[in-house]
Amino acid sequence: MPAAVCDDLGQLVLSGVDSVAPRLRAHRRSGAARRTGWVLLGVALLARAAFAFATPGYVPRGDDHDYLRLAVAIARSGVYPTFHVWVTGRGCPTLTGLPSIPCVARPGAPGADLVARPTAYRPPAYPYALAAPELVARWLGAGELTLARAFQVLIGVLDVALVGLVARMIWGRRVGLVALGLAAVYLPFVLVSGTLISEPWYDALMLGAICAVLRWRRQRSRRWLVAAGVLAGLCALTRSNGIIVLLGVSALTVAAAGDDRPGALRRLRAALLVLTCGVLTILPWTARNAVVLHHLVPISTESGGTLVGTYNATSRGDHAEPATWLGLSHIAGYGTVYTEQSAHPETVIDAALRRDAINFASAHPAYIASVVWHNTVRLFDLEGFVRTRFTAGTIGLPGGAAVAGAIMFYVVALLALAGTLSARARQAPRALWLLPALQFASTVIVISETPRFRTPLEPFILLLAALTGERLVTAVVRSWRRSTART
Image 1: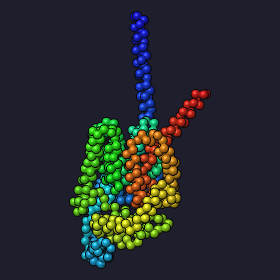
Image 2: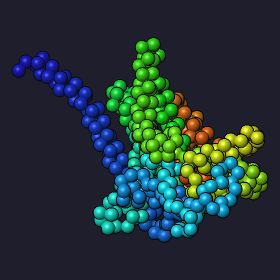
Image 3: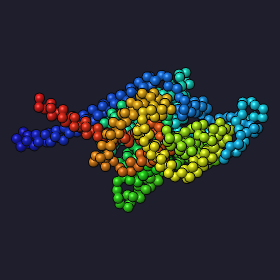
Image 4: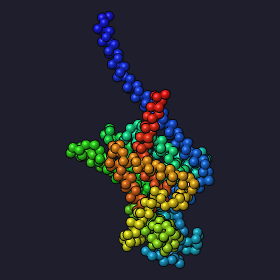
């Protein structure tokens, strides 16, 4: 073989090796990243399962009890339940702003009737999701609460995975792994995964919708827009203020890259598709409410009770806990409404309480600013650990673990604050931050209890903290490599 030909073949082989080697290194890094990701998800699962095992005395008593009750009823009947109450028209108390009859009666009392009271107080998505482990419990003869908590643990792990996925889609593999690691061991996330509240499920749906839009920004396939709309619609059917996710995800779609006019029109059509899919997801529940409640109730009848719990004279005059949310039974002048509310249709009670709250807020506009300020302080656990223990106890969490979670939140929040100042934070679509902004505003204007009502904000805090964490990890690794090279 001539020497020239040998030289050409040698150059060809060397060029092939040079082109393949980076791919092999990238493949090895990708494989190592996947293995690390699975390990971190395993840590997330172990942490949440360990907390569930460490709290065998957990008993749902508040909202978590109501969710479990609805889930059990759905698992048994297949439909959202209708409850029954004994009412009478005799000797009823006078209620300001409400019909005087009927009123609650003792079961079987003379002249009393058993009437159906359909409900739409709790948005349906989480009770229906929680009905799945209840069905499994019935088939296996296992404990309903045990399987429900196991289901919640899996939702918590899903939240961790989605936080890592969002970070990776925006900033790359390393930030994604750091975000995954932070979310896996982030104690407030672990705690809410051990109690039957809707916020972890809400986070999973919200993060899924964000991932779908980010995927669409790369592939431009309409199926991702449909998925984003459906998931955002389910967010609205999970929490009363969840409609903000549909608005935020639509804005994220409009804010896709491209400034040309045809591109802008395509983005507007894409956002319209997301909105349409979201509305179509909500519509069957709205239709059910119109048929069953005989009123237009888009999602829930809980807005009146939620608003009046904060906007009332008792909360305004409380100097120890100013502007705090109270249940009806603790508000001056509403004790009788609390005891008699089940005798009236939910729509009547909801409208009356919402009217009272709006009238009170209109008469005391400065109080709205007070509510926002004090709820902001509470949302960031800055009112003291006594308050932290109390609000954690409302969802069955141990006070000591809640305090430890608050301390960990302070650390992660500082990392997130540093992350907002980094150049990489600006690589994320600006519209992404509309979601936490809307979530924050719609929370502090009414109610704030930690860690529960901070849960929808936690993914965004972790995303920003991961930017700082990735820089710290990179600096440590480089320092270690330099010291190793010297030795």
